[in-house]
Image (tube, rainbow, N blue to C red):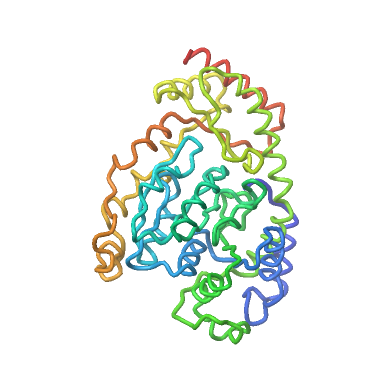
Length: 398
């Protein structure tokens, strides 16, 4: 969470006083509807659906694309486990691809992982860094494969002037505690495809047949789930959305100041970005020649100033495929009939995932150190930090 305060408190209080906390049956036209309208306009898309989480948004997006048993979906080896769990949730099989030094999915490995069963690709804009969407879309369009952007960690980011989530057929955001804007837990799906939107809309609300929008749907009803948002979340998000541009501007300012100094270093390089202008500025990533040098660097920079402590994505646990027990041990459901790995439709699919399946990813993550600028410290603070990084690099690596 970057900023939250009295405005959000007042907005929530207004909803509570209204006694209308549900977005439907009296909540129409209020907070959630307003948020969706504002975000549609900001993104420049026809449809936006607010959900209960980023994971829910991914699931609804896959449902919207009619991904299911018998299908494979390519995901990166570095992402939160939810990206792959969303695929299992719809009965399909996640196929894990390598990343490159941008910390995003490697288009070259996407090509290697495509089979006749590939239905979709989920590129993930990790730690605010945009994927190489030109290359990904070229691969997908040539083969008629859907692209569902996972921009859960990159709300407000862009790629070559296009907002993230608007480049593929659909895209997902997360609004949980640790994202660029937050309501504690929430998400959303953006798309220009009316069929994807309406299928997602039906799936996200098991009561959709009773809603005021029901008669206008062209997609036949089917059994959905419950991933609805609510008016309290909508009220918070409306205030947070108003803060987003300022948050990103200041994050980018801090990162740019650091990068200017860090680029002079010989001991490491700043991780390449697929679009520096569209990068959210929420992370600064350094890549070393070896994992051993990265370990020495992190230990020394912390020794100099504990406030400068840096981590490594290899140690993040939940974001590294080697820790995804449900995939490696193929535990895809609570009973066999609901387990994607055991469904007869998935026989012959690319199910195997072992600890050594993506060695390039593990090497890159082990050689990477990163930190996350906040808005509590000014630009000068981060310039000083960058100068210390360069000096430490010279001490332990050159």
